[in-house]
Length: 393
Image 1: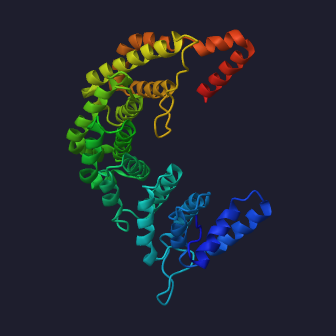
Image 2 (image 1 turned 135 degrees about the horizontal axis):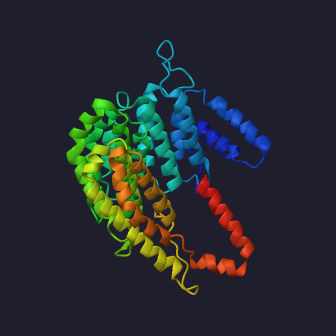
Image 3 (image 1 turned 45 degrees about the vertical axis):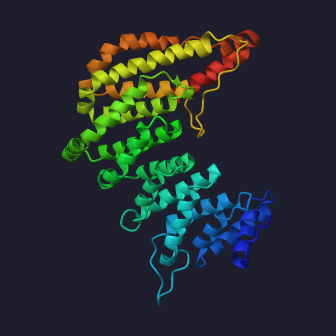
């Protein structure tokens, strides 16, 4: 398979990128110096786009090109043009930017997940610098991708939106809400959509909630009133998801449940008045979630025979942690958020005795731990010490 891009400058860049990942220190040092020189030449960003957009390259060159582009745009996306109509070297020229963004949007649909993730990070970096005034294509493009037939593309767009939304302020949420929230809710509410996609849609909304809370004071109260109908629907669907068993129809809903708990945590402190109004439904969902999780733990870990197949339900299809430990950690965080607010503290006190009984179930040793104790008590003790250290951290 040909690996030449048909251009001497591009082929040199590929060779330098290959050398930059060499095990030979001297070769790497020379390559890094040459990359520094190339970054100060016009069209560097476009050349990097050409490299990461060239599928025949099967080494790490494409990913490295995206990493270098992220570093480059951080310092060079917004610098002024040079004199006499030329472009200042070391910057992304205005004439390049549309092409760079087009290449990055296309990269969100690449087959290789590591390339998609790298492209998402570059887009988020540029968005933080230039959106909304100088990057009007961002939201229409990402929102349009949410209706793509390929769930991989939808998930990639959602992952990018999470990164972008992490830099939102309350005014940014106001700006995009009418355009963004309806397709997000449509994805989350559709039980035919893949779990990882529904989970990521909820994650984007939660990130926007955190941004809304940053407004503070009267501004936040006004925003809360404006968004309450939307929030009611999201909370209702999140609460319903928490009350399902983690495994239904052969699919694990735990990823969605973890994200639902995170969303409620983002509400508990800044929007405690609203949380209190919904507290009966929320606390019923919390009880159901913990009750189902404790029953699952007993069934899958405590009562399981040593001859049964090992339990493997720690990651979802996107490789994200959906373990029981993560669920319990997020659940504990929610309870703590509630306990810190005076108007919610009484609710916590009422439900704690019942929750404590369920939490005791997780103190039982699993079959694998008992087997380790029988086989090697010293290793068992070392493992327990390590787990305790991690919990303290």
